[in-house]
View (cartoon, rainbow, N blue to C red):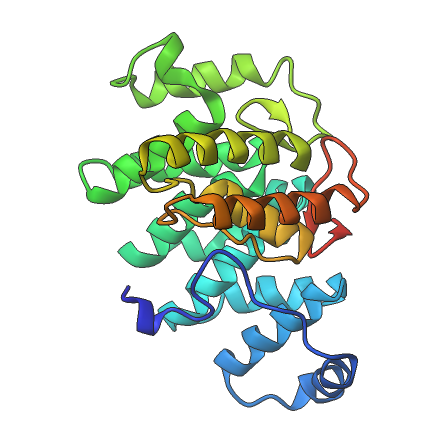
Amino acid sequence: MSQEKILLPGMWYGEKKSSTEVEFIKKNLTSIQTEEECILSIVELLKVGDFSVKPLLIQLMNTTKDDRVLNLCIRIFCSVCTHEDLKDSNNFKFLSDVSDASAHSFASGAVETLSYEVVPYLLAMLEDWEDTEIEQTIKNSLDFMLGYSKKISDEASLDEIGEFYLEEMKWIDASVYYYEKKPVFPGDLTKRLFKNAFISLQIGSNLKMYVVPSLLSIWSGEKCPVAYETVMDSVEMEKLQSYANTLSTMEWIKGKKYFYSTEI
């Protein structure tokens, strides 16, 4: 799916609307005529912490035939879903008949759920999308979350990955959200971001980080000033330090998940 066809492209979902604009969206939500307008309105309400629209998001995700709308539904769902949302298989009816582009959106976006409850869906997809380009995306996400390749093999079978997952679940705290097998915490990811930033500064390469800047932006509602293609210099480092200072003033609890500074 080309960038011009993607709704709200980039690492986050944009700035919050003004309170006046949000009130207008709330009042007119039931009179919206198009799916595109509907999902864009849902996003704006979620950004101000109105999670009452999540059922509408899930309904749209499972009924739309528009790949652009579905792509954004999947992305925003991964950002705001809870463990309980993921346990409900009725929320994933769209996976039974999904395009390559939307399958890729879910497979790649699954890591941003920060929940091991998404793994069974990826395992099911792995079987359905075997010997396709999507297969590697699914495996990348599974390996990112489980780290199975270091313990088994890059070429581990579906059954082997499934068994590894069941073993991992024995030590998982079901109430906690994880990033690379550790309870997620913005401070930890900020440290990782600085580590890569210093490497970029030293060797003059691109930052080459996408997920961390995206997560920090989506959690805080403050856009990260550096991105995958950023080549760090003193100016960019100063911007990053200022950003880190902003994040440090916000309240975070390790293992919790946030959306635009609201705990999910």
